[in-house]
Image (tube, rainbow, N blue to C red; front, side):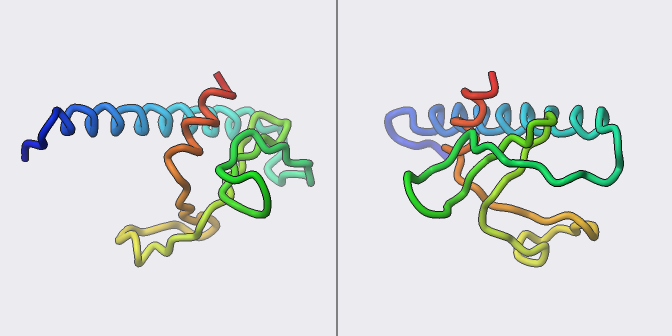
Length: 107
């Protein structure tokens, strides 16, 4: 499908940026999980590194202080997404802008 004014090129570039940000964050999480000393995480203080609002509770990405990230967003059921999700895991939907902001601050 062709969009006027090169919109398809812009859409493709945006998709590549989002996929790169997701890959970066996923790699950071995997590396943090591999370097974890104990299987049971201890309580920790979360430090917000990116959010999409200035007041109240909204989608946010936090750093834990131990090379891990915590994502706050809107839950999405496996049924809604049409995929299988193992026990102990959850799907969280967050705005693309949130990943862009987190990527800038983590780079």
